[in-house]
Image (cartoon, rainbow, N blue to C red; front, side, top):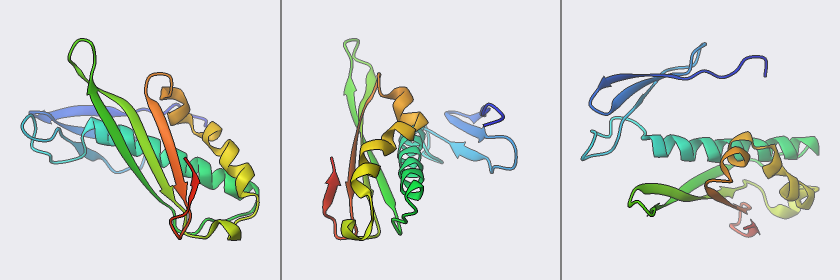
Length: 148
């Protein structure tokens, strides 16, 4: 990466913010769900989960492509665990990421090696893992569990 990413958020009203990623990337509207906001866009929690799931998915693709393998359609779902801390403040204490491959495990060469290394390539999950546990599950096109 030649440039450091820069994200600028500007309050529009209430809990609604315009999220500007710079360059040629479309802006997003972020908002808290009711009763705080109006749910006009993804919440910060949603964006964190999206970042983790997207980074893990991209890392899995990267690891597969090292072996010239294609998983087909890949669908990732991120689910948070939200609990109160010792000060009764809500915190995301875990994120479960389920990744479904579009091909059967037997059709993907070197899958065992890929599954042991791909998480190390994910900047986002590896950066936040000390504060938030991140569990990853991967299934193939038949729903058979491959990891997690």
